[in-house]
Picture 1 (cartoon, rainbow, N blue to C red):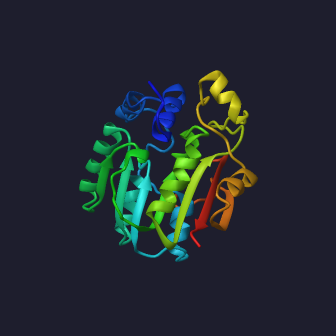
Picture 2: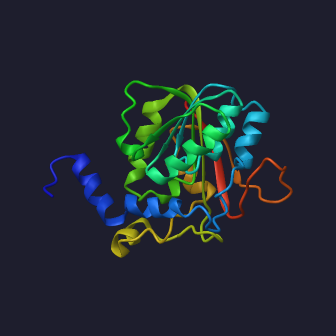
Length: 232
């Protein structure tokens, strides 16, 4: 590849570190695997945001929707949802689940950085476990994506691995990932790192994901960190 643009450079760096689409297709194809989030229960913090009216029914974009559990929950609460995932197997699973639950969701099978949603703005953007699988150079692209598609005064939320946690969360330097040519299963974050990365946005909360004493309709895992931000 001859690098002639920022897009070319990003693709070159992606080729060094990003898990291929085939990896995620294989991951989601085996529905019976013992994966904690292979369930139909929404994230505990998302449920709390809705119940406390931090967010109210609006247009939502979900990045990395997986089997659709959070998208389906939001649709049931009256939200208009566009849900994106790179894996065709994940989208097929989510589409089937949504049909079973009789909810309408616009599912898109695409890399989040190749989305073709011209001039479309969303009041809420949600990411449950996508961000920590992005290489350091894609943080810039990610923020540009949020800025492009989040309406003024809109909010976005992420959940990500904590550093050196039970399920992942590498704490290596950004440089080391490129030396190793591996993300080591996913990057780990703490409150200070998230504040630095998303400093352009207003912080509403950053906290640990709750995983004990959850209600029946809530999903949570230890060693995850969650954040809610607002576009000024």
